[in-house]
Image 1 (cartoon, rainbow, N blue to C red):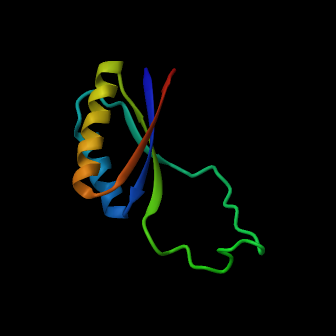
Image 2: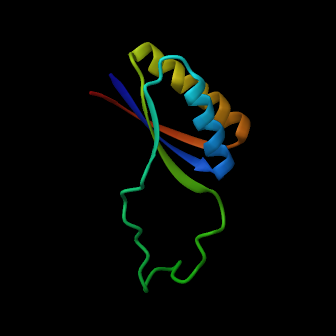
Length: 97
């Protein structure tokens, strides 16, 4: 079963729109927002030390299980089209399980 992982850079509303789209697609087994596992590299010597990180869009990671590669391809196409409409950035990582 293909598992798609995507990173969406956009607002909380953008993430809700993409999640709603994914949940409305036939055959999707699971849609889950997963925690960001990467440590943030902000140290006292950083040029951005002390700057607010609340400016700009957030990155959200979603994990989607599709029943087959064909559905996974349709998911990717639908999410890319919606992200374009929302003016959000989406990156995909695909993995076969």
